[in-house]
Length: 189
Image (cartoon, rainbow, N blue to C red; front, side):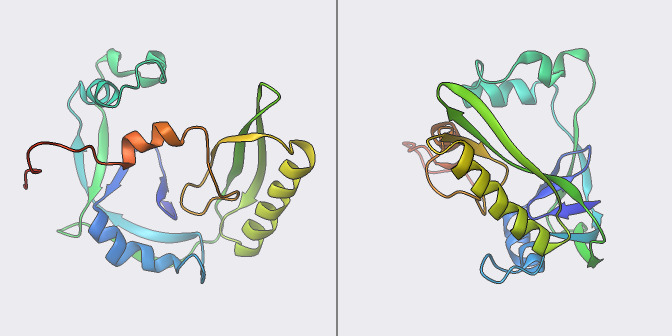
């Protein structure tokens, strides 16, 4: 399994407890200013958890996403269980086994340009830091040259954005990242 910065390329969702990620996993990649790599080879030991059958529907309703996610994409109506792996450092771990030999993928930026949605992308080897940097700069140049007044909708990496600044989906993202004020203190578990 290849770990890419904070995304696991696998067919099963992997949830890493935030404190464990910050303490153990994030340092494996270096800092934004002193990036060592974007990918590593890792041994991952986790607990397999099953989501309740209505987990996805509850999530969609909680964040008011009914009109933003097509029901057929979710596939939760077919009766199949949805599984994920959970890692928190308690009998679970992510262990560095070496530098990644190769991990291909796309970097991309979605834009609205002259009332049309446009998509600009590059296919890269994430294990080659120079390739990532070179192609990120080339992607940014393509956008400036071909879509100079485009408004950014979203881009592949929300941690180290190719093009910093406002994205039109930021309001939707706030639903996931901003805490709502509540009258009672949060419960601890």
